[in-house]
Image 1 (cartoon, one colour):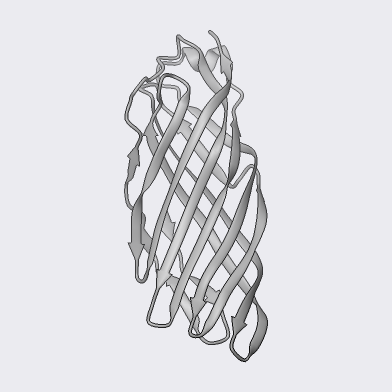
Image 2: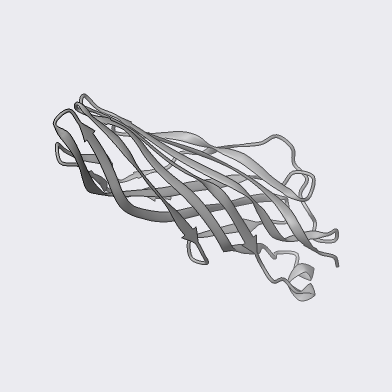
Length: 204
């Protein structure tokens, strides 16, 4: 996944948060229990996802967080599971993330946030036969941020994003849990985590 140029809209400075750069690797939770698809296979998973961005410059200390729950689903039939080269692809069925933006810029405090809804197209997960999986969650959020300054308060448009890279190994045949290795781009650090548990299984 590639981080693209985004900007934080504030009156004192247009702070460029990231420039184009490839993301880093991930640190999956320990434990590998890869399904050979002859045992129950997860068809739906659900659980929390988190993503954080921390940007620090000479005048800006900005912390953005995305936290919420995501549900993944996939319809798989017996023919697919009998194919020795088959993989299962999950799409986001639903999800909600609470977005917050806190920090300071110059003498002004930053306080903003919103809630976004996730749907198909905001993410994808691929589970392989050896139990390894990879995927992502990606979305934008736009809202008004309050600036509390010594001379008064103001509201400014704000735009932030989540690009959570997901990678690891299925745990005990039903759980995907791990952390995205921190990625540093310019003055920003990105990190995140996930913990998805299977709620529905296919039994061959």
